[in-house]
Length: 183
Image 1 (cartoon, rainbow, N blue to C red):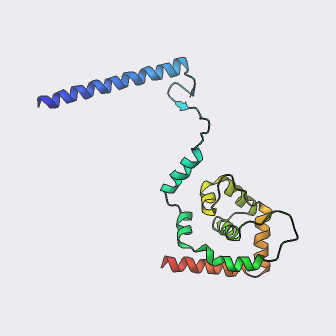
Image 2 (spheres, rainbow, N blue to C red):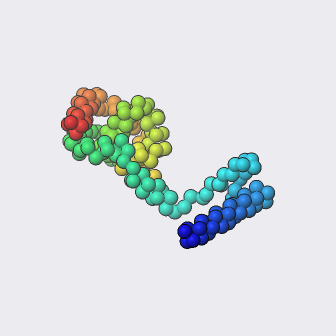
Image 3 (cartoon, helix red, strand yellow):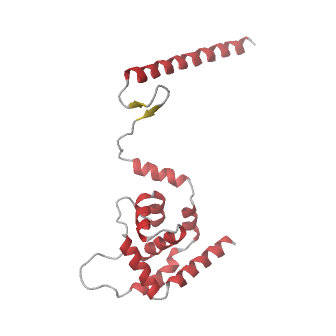
């Protein structure tokens, strides 16, 4: 019983000490305006934004790895390489001559079309969302430093698949993969 009372008194002193420190901190911030903190009112404090650090991107990607999103699950259950032969055959021999920019990886471009259809995005919005969302970049195997296909490239890729008559076949095959893995 005696030890229990002693622990309660000690906890009470610690709690009061923390409350005093908090009150002093709030007084200093509100009254003296410590650099790095902004006050909207006497009751609301916000922490100022920090300059980006060297490992912020790596840390954010590690945080994303801890959570399994729908795109992560999709990437796990679909064997994207099964689409490569059809895609390569559709785009072989399309080079206009020497020089010019190399084409984007065809499986990645197909994954962009899957994103576009899944999220009901226009070509312009697809380009923007890939640049904006780390989850889209991760799904496509891109980093912040990688080039992202622009709206015209996405549209041309889709149009070429449609003209070759393989777009619907690829999407049907994709749906078949999903149904087999679901069941």
